[in-house]
Image (cartoon, rainbow, N blue to C red; front, side, top):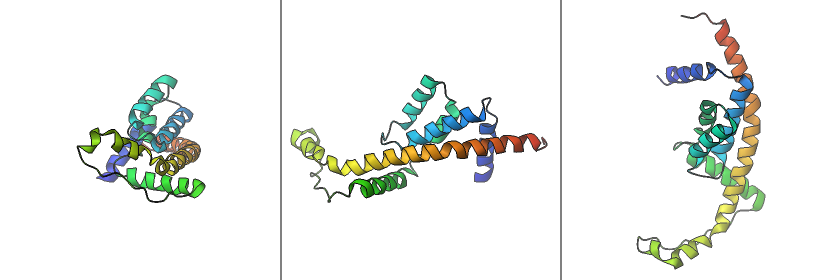
Amino acid sequence: MVRSRANYYLRRLLALDDTPERIALGFAVGIFLAFSPLIGLHTVLGVAVSLLFGLNRVAVLLGVFVNNPWTLVPIYAAATYVGGAVVGYPTAPSLPHFGWRQLSSAAYWLQLMQQWRVLVPTVLGSTILAVLLALLSYPTALYLIKYGKSWLARKPVA
């Protein structure tokens, strides 16, 4: 069932009325946004960027949806590892005690904001992965789209 569903979406992607270069570019932009450190804004940014620059929305969103609830933790764990390898790993943070009443206190938020050094490896690593994977995904997607379109053209219609 998963294979037939993947085949269905692959055929839909290959049937897009756009050049392989533009589809691959849209996918690469989507991959960049998927690995960007802007957690929670990926889909909104993907739609906005595709509309703003006239990219293929389906291809951009396909790239953006690489980051989903099942891949979120591994992606940001890898990003934190890469960023930590570059700038070093911070010591364990002393997070403030969490409670609903503390959420309204300024001291809680001040103490939480003092833990910014924990975010530095994640943001840096996420940015590094976003750039590298976007640069790698463009030629890979371009090759696969061109190969897929030529394969569909050769395959007899059932």
